[in-house]
Image (tube, rainbow, N blue to C red):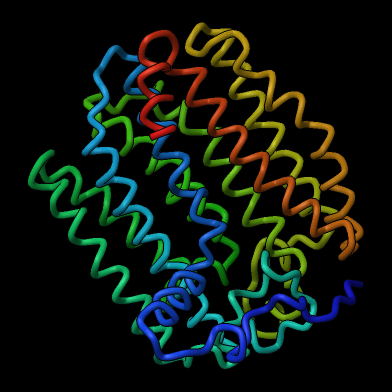
Length: 333
């Protein structure tokens, strides 16, 4: 059983109070749980790299608009997820959270922001995403609207009734699609690449890595989720089978990268990072199976790092040669 005291760096009104514009902006930023935004932004870069590997030129303005739109949608969804978890009773009952990774932002529970203020922030962020989103529609066509609508629908259906996918054991599927398949496909298509089967296979590793993040993040929260009727996969499967699924997701992602490299679709060195990181998977799997709080925190960090390193490696393994140099210069700027 996990027995963890509240993290000393959880948000408090004393630390994050104030009525100045700067204080309010900083509160709003932290409420979005920014450390998790890479789960949607990095796959966009992976998709962009795929387009460059097809010999297409990089359009930095399109990429920036896409990153802004995705970041705002993801931020809004994170905030609304906190609101939904507060209303369902999941976060208020969570005594075994591993802050800052699980148990929500704690903004509502620690009275940093009210539930109503968080809801307003979440919907405002989603409304703001329409600015870059509609700009992309004007520049690239109505296909953008379709991709964006699917992503937005998945983000809302994950947290909110009546679908409440996270409470029905479908959260990992929603995250794999919204933070894996869609951003990779969207990033590639926005740069002019066609949507085809090879691109879908290329999107598989980021999708699996994203699902693994959600799966391991749900492990410390199983008691609170079960009490609130939120039947996540970790609740449904139990610790041992959850550990097996987690290992399977990471290994499947590494094998997908290896298969694409062997088929000539990626640079030969592409599988090195995912394969070298596999020993961490065994350690993280043990932490999930035993639900050891001291081991789960570094395991969650390792899973986030696995996703980030995997996505960056995949991007540069696809965009080789001159395109890779252009891409690197853009990222550094």
